[in-house]
Image (cartoon, rainbow, N blue to C red; front, side, top):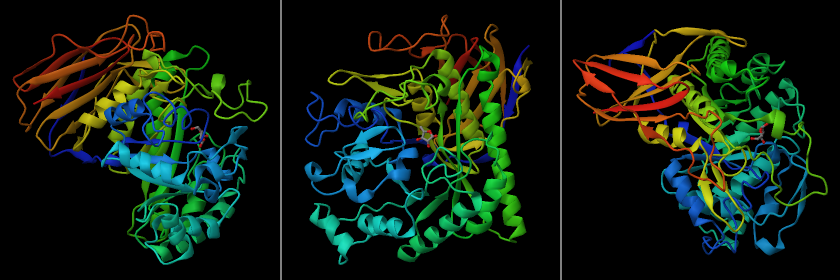
Length: 502
Ligand code: AHR
């Protein structure tokens, strides 16, 4: 019952794009307000950004930060979010039944991204739900045009002389979803996305544009949506988006632990659809994938249809504040493995979301910030998952799942770093059995195990909370050896593992 695979540097999937470790800040619940921005908090800087949260975000290692939504963007009026903060209008946010104060806006977002550090970059969505081409162009002119026009001069008058230089743009959000304000058919959206993209490229041919794909693989319109949208936009956009959230339902933990099977098939089906449209158009261009929302999300408990939705239009209510377990972190790690395994075509991905809202970082207003269980796999993957993804074909014991049939107990990938190190990321999906692993290393200049970090716990429900913020942290696994070109390790039941070789 040993799982095995072999590694050789000549057999690889592709380079990891740093944007694979993106995240997402939406005006939703307490992601922005009392999450990243809380003037008056003891750790707040002069602009109200929480420096304790900024430090955790840096440690997490996020790159592209998608903003301002999500569903929120389909009601977003960018003009409301610029200029003196105290003069900005309060608005109804239909997406989350909340009041948006606009105290945190465009320039605060850019300042936030810059304060994270040079590894972070903005990824801005335009509103194609209730707005269209003209407003997208105005926003682009405001943020990116150097000077000498009404909107670029307005930006300067607002204290930002230098343009923001936003390169990566989402053309709307989840436009296939009936819940989206201004929801559209694929034909309607495809035309609007094409015309918006064409016009945005007139301002700047070098912008990178993401067309909306499906909100999940389970959508009735899936695949047909992508084919129709891409038929309109193929030459005008660079990426198509994918969104997916997973949760344990009906106590079916084995299926939940195999969620990455769905994520991988989703990616492969979207790649096939993109390439089919490209072939029909006789195009040499390849459309890449922006998996710009992914996570574990207990939608059945904390989602829009789960009851307890805000009434009275509150400001920054507690919404979608999932508290993740060790089991969730193992699934989450497996989703990261799925993204890395497809690094040749998935070149942007955003963990949804960053703080408080289905997030790896939690905060208490006026109080501390802490790491959820999911913080660790993300931080480790972002830190050690840089370089070239090697082709990993596992031979593994399997088990039967209700949702996905027979799945291997081992889910794994490996990254060959530019410094010559090799990092194996591996999940043992068995809830009860340890899984021996052997990796045969060929043509790789590694001779020792630098680290085997494992996230597992006797209590699969263990989690970090305000009262016990460090209940769950990764530990060093014992007895992992590299001898005669073979790595041997034992993966604890229900575990996320990072094995570094140098
Ligand atoms: O991330 C939470 C929500 O999930 C986003 O606003 C939306 O795009 C998706 O349905």
